[in-house]
Amino acid sequence: MRTAIIGAMEEEIRHFLSLGESFEEHQKAHLTLYTGTLHGTDVVITRCGVGKVNAAVTTQILIDVFNAERIIFTGVAGALEPSLEIGDLVVSEACRQHDLDASPLGFAKGEVPMFDGPSLFRADENLVRIAAETAEQVSGVQVMRGIILSGDQFVADRDRVAELRSEFDGVCVEMEGAAVAHAAMVNKVPFVILRSISDKANGQAPENFNGFVEKTAARSAQIVEHMLNRLS
Image (cartoon, rainbow, N blue to C red; front, side, top):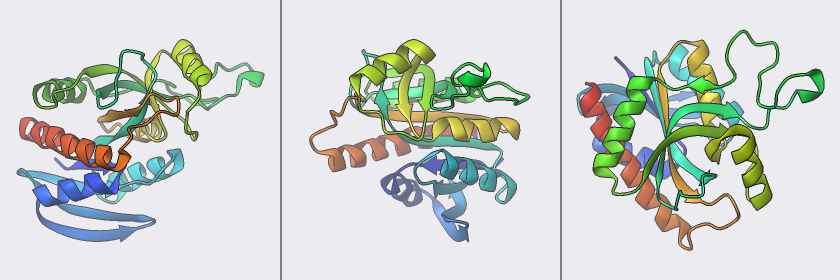
């Protein structure tokens, strides 16, 4: 079974590639993709780029061209849940688009209009369980399961944080996860999204953000590495 690993940051891709064996490089659309073996598991690894369109295009390519049969996405996010601190981890129980708004037509905010399917995209229960258990064992930080919100906006306003938390019950906010989830769902491919909290979605980020990125990239790689051992 081939596992697709999508990283939001170049640092994450480098960590994964350093752990694997005999990677072959491919070019498709805007992507550089790597196929090979990671701890005995057939994988394809890439960085999707920022935003929902990049994320959806990447997911479809991984499924159609590279025969991905399950998808793991790792990256960073802003906290909505007040108890989350910088460095904590969120595992997606589900994902939703917070910036999709056809409410003037009678649809709820976040609802995909005229779509024969859900607007809350639920992650695979087995992948969620394995991701959360693995993260709790190896990360040394708080691990929370919940709804991840996505939109083509960088949220850095306290009032907007409160609004998203109240309206959608999200625990963190980012820019890609729901698009990966939507594309995976319509293709019936299991997925899970892992997010490290990089900021409180209020403009406050770690003082040494580059050092934070390196640290979280290494942690994410370690979690995914242990997940693959359990999934193989």
